[in-house]
Length: 98
Image 1 (cartoon, rainbow, N blue to C red):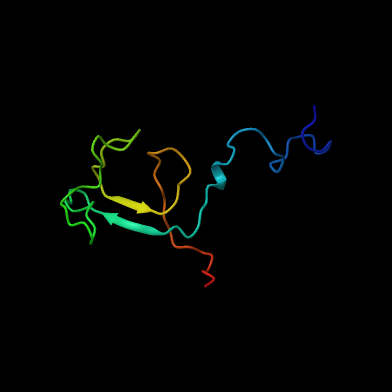
Image 2: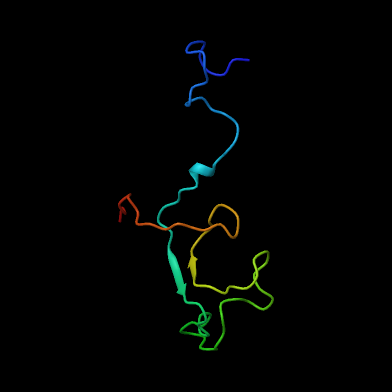
């Protein structure tokens, strides 16, 4: 079973191989930041319409995550990967077209 060309007699780095499917393609652009929260802020779950003093963690914690004890960031949409994987944010290279 040959993968790639006959010569050179080695597997080139450009030939598709198994493993790491999609990990390098989890780049997303233009995510809207909805809320920034600080650690220990008792009003982190309050809004302008609802002034009740409450934290961001719901009763019983988030499913498969638990309590939020550190600074947090709420963004619109989903993020690929596991729940506790760190998310790296940076300024977008692609200019906005509006």
